[in-house]
Length: 139
Image (tube, rainbow, N blue to C red; front, side):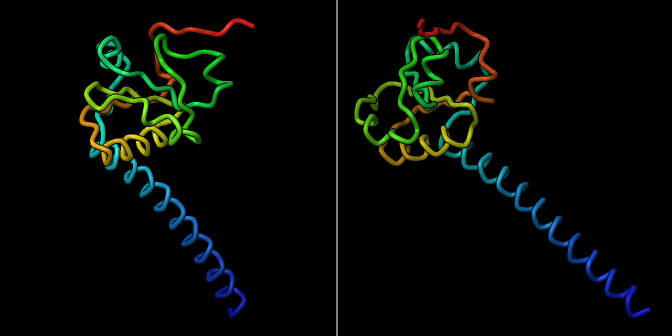
């Protein structure tokens, strides 16, 4: 009987740890969703296309990914080196950000918001959800 209580106790702790991990993952997703809503407009591919001509399109992926393929008219400002490039953005024009995910553009949008940028848009679903014109660098 005592052995059975030990097994139940072990399974209880395993279940508890798994539930805590699941709650942490869910909480992280909710945090990024809320933070994204607060600092930028999260837009789908169609909305993103509408603003391309009037805005500054920024690809936050690394240079190799950018060279493979990117949204037509975008300029590459890799996330890891964004501090070097951010002064080249104009505050009076909308900024359209994208990456492979949504977390990095939200972090950059938060930074830009603090710097006084008013119109910041993030591509929902990242580059993989883009269905518009692209450009590839030829080797």
